[in-house]
Length: 560
Image (tube, rainbow, N blue to C red):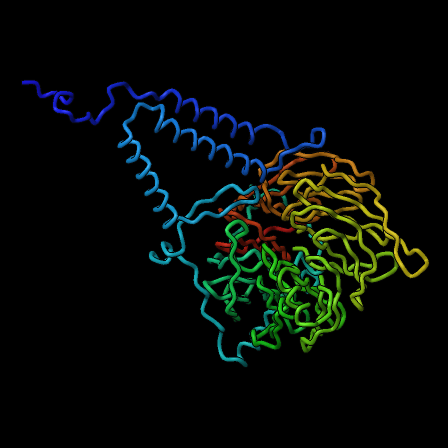
């Protein structure tokens, strides 16, 4: 009797021929080689007008992976020699693993869109690892106000950092650091978990204020600089979420006198008592402007100009159309000013453009106090008293404008952008007829491609992260002085005396000599260990750092 599978009519579970692995191996090797080439070859410099930036490398890598995946499926079902039933089982297991990953894992992205994989919120909550709002406020109202005033009055007022990029809204400090961190390492004073946010800190005396996201609540938090102990917090039901851009608020609070002004990611402009956290007034900028929340959230920090607080106006979007339909007859405003005492509207800087992600910048240019800012496709200057647009200059490109527009002197303005746009210096003069004339001094798409960051400027030289690579540019000539392929990523650069203090995207903090002679890193330590886009703040010998996971304060030694 013949009991073989062939004689019984039952198909064997294993193929009659051997599995052909070579095609699959070739697909994997070719895909890996292309991806390695994309990340290793210096393709970020334009070659006859063509270039690949960091984020584009990731996109192209994704295309390569998808193509390789399709090729592997074709191999599996048509050319592998594996029975169809086993091929289907392999695919089913793969799908199950993908579903499990989506259910339990969360993917964030760095500045080049490279994925950062971690546990999903519900998994962290299950094990008690999700940050929660610190209990507050501290003490009874009268006692809290006394304590708040005491903290705000401590220390040297000249070292206060009252808002985004410090009191001058430029990334520079008139301090000198001891650069030998081997002999004098930064000393950790405190550390605590942080809610999601890309805000930095505003500091007066020994009182610091920032923003955090806890679940569905956008929270403004004030704490003691020396200890990290929370004095008060104020929460609003608001949440901005973005798979690529991250969750939570973006803007940095602005302190003036006994008040703090804060822009939330969904457009809530809030004025609080600095010492107690009590609400004084609040406006919804998006509703006031019949606007839409920008794709990456409301990011510009409030600017105090005289009796007003000035903020960016969001996108036109459907909101602008709704405003027209309601018969308002108003043009979209890229800037809005509110009375800083009452919150009543003061003026509108109108322009039929989406606002940018940068913060309004006050400067005197061509003899006129102006507010400088990007729109979606222009560099503009608005009268600081009325909001009327004084001049504009084309700045094309469909990608976000994030950096500050900086006045180099009373005639020249510097602007920069990532996404292969580069930088420009403009000369602005009064034309004698009540208007202003704008001319390009130079423009170069290869130079200072600041994506999430700003250049630190000393004299005629700018230092910054150009698509993640540290660069020095001669602003008078429009020429590169030096550039280095560094590991700082899309971090932040602050000028501190003779050094650049660099908050790397990885969480490291590095000291680099601020010199035209070339790149020389002299010290480094690792206060954070995750994606960091937030600006560091130096208040005397206290260094505040944070990201969307934690915050910490270090004591650094100052030079005599």
